[in-house]
Amino acid sequence: MNELKEDDITFFRVEQKLKDGWKVLLVFSFSQDEKVADLFCFNVAELKNPDKKMDVHTLLNEYNANFRYSKLYEENGTISIRYAYSLDEEFHPDLAFRKLIMLLETAEQVYPRLMEVIWS
Image 1 (cartoon, rainbow, N blue to C red):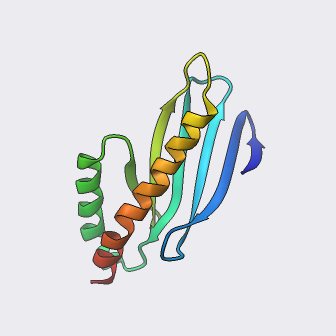
Image 2 (cartoon, helix red, strand yellow):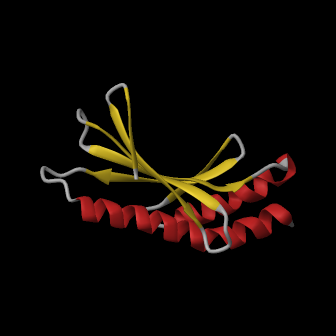
């Protein structure tokens, strides 16, 4: 993973491929001042047709109602996943890494149906 710093926020990021070859960006970001880290899986899908926006948002709402931890959202035509990770007094990197893997697995799970809705 690559480490970046911007202002008081530290980012760790790595690009990964889904099974079909689509590339996503996994990011773990945190600030020393907060007790929560933000985990992202960016670029799960791209929504280029504005006529499909309502259908895609309906699907994202369905996923968000059913997924306990991972939350999907669309921003400027890009669909991504977010997870807020509580940083206890003792940080466990292996657990944080497993949460990033969970986001990658969520992307694998939702990608086919997202593409079905986007391309229909």
